[in-house]
Every structure is written in C-alpha cells, then in structure tokens.
Amino acid sequence: MIKRYFEIDNLLQNQKVLVIYGPRRVGKTTLLKNYLTGFPQKYKLDSGDNISVQHILSSQDFVLIKDYAQGYDLIAIDEAQQIKNIGMGLKILVDNNPNLKIIVTGSSSFDLSQKIGEPLTGRKRTITLYPFSQQELLAKYNKFELKEKLDEFLIFGSYPEVITTETRSEKIEVLNELVNSYLLKDILAIENIRGSKSLFDLLKLLAFQVGSQVSLNELSTQLKIDVKTVGRYIDILEKGFVIKRLSAFSRNLRNEVAKKSKYYFWDNGIRNAVILQFNQLKNRNDVGQLFENFMMLERIKYLSNNFIHTQSYFRRTYSGQEIDLIEEREGKLLAFEFKFSETASVRAPKDFLNEYIDSKFSVVNTKNYLDFIL
Image 1: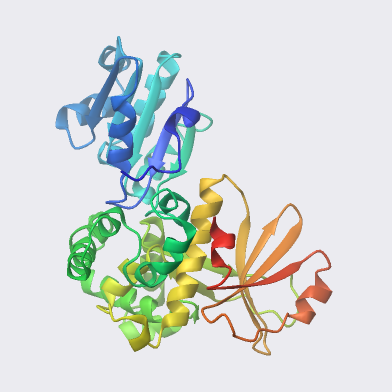
Image 2: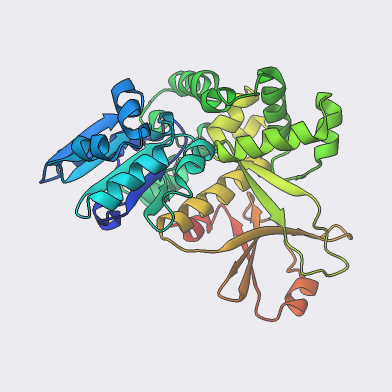
C-alpha cells in the first residue's frame, strides 16, 4: 500500500464538506475506505450510484435529509457527481448538523463543481487526487531507485494500477483499458457531446503537440469542426482531468506573445496510450516532450500536495526565445527550463531577467529534477 500524501484527518472540519476531486482510477475510493476503516466514531458510506441515496439527497426535503444523517458522526458519499442538486443536499446536511463531518468524492470536476459550487460557498474544502506523485512514491522507492525508474515513469506514467503492475505488457493493457473504458466516460456522458471520434482525434493532436503552442484555428482546420467546438472540447478535457492548460506570460511587453496556450497531459502513460506509443526512450524522438510533460505535472502535484499557491505560465517572445515554466508567487517570478540531457547548453534569458528584477532562472534536467519535485 502506497500512502497518499493527503491526510484526511487534517483536512476534515465540522460544518465544512471535504470534496475530493480527481480522475477516475486514481484511488479516491481507496483513500476514502482506508480512512474510514480507522475512523473511531459512527459513519455511513454511500455511493452516488445508489438510487435511494440519489432520491434522498436531491429531494431538498429537510426532514428526510436530516433523518438520513441522524446518529452518525460522519457521512461519506462516493461518486457524488451522480446525485442531482447534490450541492443543496450537502448544504442542508451542513447547516442542520453542526457536528457532522462530511466527505464526498467525484471523478468529474466540471460536473461536481457545478452542482456544489454556489450552495456550498464557504462550506467546503477541496483537494484534488492525481496519479501518484514522486513525493508519494518516495515511500516505496528511494531517490536512487526513482531515478532508475525515470524511463518507466516517462513511458507508462504513474496511475496506481500501472505502478502496482509488474510487466510491460500488463502496464500497456492497464493504460489501454483506462483510455478506452474510463478516460472519456464522464466527458461523453455530457449532454450534446456525441462526437466521440472528433474528441479522440483532438486528443491525439494535442498529444503530438505537448510542449508546443497550440492554435485552435489550426486544430479546427485539421479536425474539420468549427473552432468554437474545438474550444469547448478542450475546456471539457481540462475539467475532466485529461489535459492541463498553461497560459502565456505577458505583462504587455511588445516582444511577448500571449495569444496561444500549451497543453499537457495529466499523466504520461495516458498521453502515450492515446497515440499507442510505448517504445523505449532510445527508440523515440519525443523524449524532450515526455520529460517536459512529466516535469510540468509533477511540479503541479508537488505544489498541490504542499498547499503552495502559485500562478504558472510559459513565455515566448516574437524572436523565438522561450521559457518552459514561470511561477509567480509572493510577487516574485521563478523561471525554469526543462532539458532531458544533463549536458544541454541553456542560456539564461537576459532580457527576462533584466526586465523582471526579482526573477530567478534555473535549468531542470535529469541530474537535478528530483530537487524540483520532492
């Protein structure tokens, strides 16, 4: 058992709902059940798939909902996004049971967030559970072993089922199953999303453009669908924990380009499964992309695990100069360039450092990358 970084005990508060978001199959249910096995008081665990639970918590019937929770110290609802108007049901629970602890999980952020956002304003705390981070895997492997397994992480990612599977063929089978059976399940269930082929073709195009600026107009032309639909699909893929958008940095300087975005996959293994590419690194021409995708998302996991709040961007100038990642935190700018090769020559961006006096620039490569994400 690999322990997740979040401690539910430290996050639970009376009169606040703990909301655990995350992609499917990252271990939300396992995290919840493991916590409940050691919970010393009386609790109830239900599923949003249960029709009876759906009826009760969507009813807005104060008496019915109060009776449902009576006598319990904790109520846990798995897959809460399945419950209509779940936000109002949770609000009734919170407001009428001041000593009740509540945990809900959801695999679909766009769905669950729309249903709980307004009713639970000031009444919730949210965490996102991702595929295993290197911080979490440090409990299973030491730093030397993590570095030894870097190739595996770049190719197969770090979904729990992938990490706990031993053979290469089994890892590929798990990833293909994740992509084909789980990845788009929530997304394709949304009303008016019927173009599954267009959506998957879009994912493939984004997979090949990891680390590059993406033009929605070019995607629209290639897919033969209108640009508004492309934008809508990308937005849904973001909210469904498939891809992560990185915006361009700009302070209105004339030489900075700020119109396009970059897109990364939340997991390298999912990215490679989308394009059915599991070759070893020595036989690939996208190693730089894989390393950049890996570092970008591991950094996000690190910041999330440690509750470090920052704004993240990339930078590109009209002259072609690029910075892979810029973090803006406490009035300072931290700039990072990702290079798979330890010997790659990288020049510090003098124009950037001169323009932004408090900024710092670092190169992250396979020699020092663990210092960046642990």
